[in-house]
Length: 88
Image (cartoon, rainbow, N blue to C red; front, top):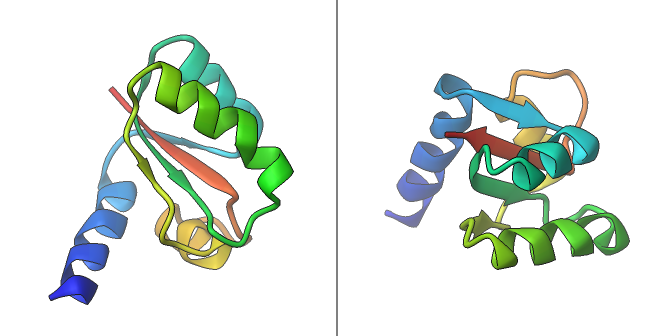
């Protein structure tokens, strides 16, 4: 059941409007355009610290159970992604 839940969440990244990458995600969060953030569990914590803090301050839910490779694949890019943000 847990795997099914993860599959559904990653499917969410394939079908909804999103931004991928630290800079674009930071901008979307700052402009109140983000509805949910996905932070890769194997990304450099220094990169993601400020994003996680911004999400908390703006009451944006954060998922951190996926690797960079999984996020990149879900976003249909050929490289890993440290962060992906769903847009409102």
